[in-house]
Amino acid sequence: MCVTTLHNLASRPAPADPFTLTKTRVHEAEGPGRRSFALFQTLRHPGAVLWVLPAHEPQRPMLRGLPVGLSERLLLLTPRSETDLLWCVEEALRAAPVALVIAEPQQLLSLTAGRRLQLAAETGRTTGLMLIREDHGSSATETRWRCDPVSAHVPVSRAATHAAADSTLHRWALSKNKKGTIGHWVVNWHGASAAFDLVPETGERRQPAEPAR
Image 1 (tube, rainbow, N blue to C red):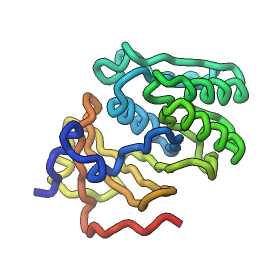
Image 2 (cartoon, rainbow, N blue to C red; image 1 turned 180 degrees about the vertical axis):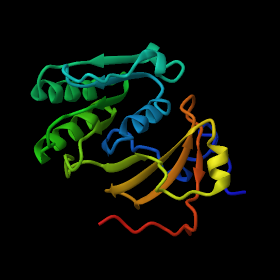
Image 3 (tube, rainbow, N blue to C red; image 1 turned 90 degrees about the horizontal axis):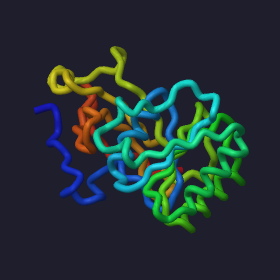
């Protein structure tokens, strides 16, 4: 069978799960599918979720389109400036009761800003996920993910396509990892829970990822 066994995140050990974000650290996601990756992560972080995005951002998470149960624990913050946005993120990361802080900065994240956010996450023991624009990340980030919806130009097996008839296929690539390996995966995720399938790309042979440089 071309689709791997369903991952039950409640019972599988963390090392077998490539999408676990290291706690008390700040991570980044880029690409057109970065919001889907963020929603996926909200289901893996029980507790309050803060989503910080600019006041002028026209596309905001719609309550009706969110996974079940998320709207009750999601708080949207809409600062007017980039300076205010980074301040909100830093203060939110220091707030210990918060499970996950998601933010959408519009400008390049400097090394100084990245380090401040990492220190805030360590202080509050909170996890952060910055949804950055292309090549706008900070070198201080713990991991960086490239997130794309799978389109016609990405070959996947017929069985995988059939299995994803009621779901959406995503390609999530870990391009930077300070404390581990990198790699990429095609993911079959239906959006309703944290359960997912890993789907092999056609003709691809799985090999160990290269060490992070």
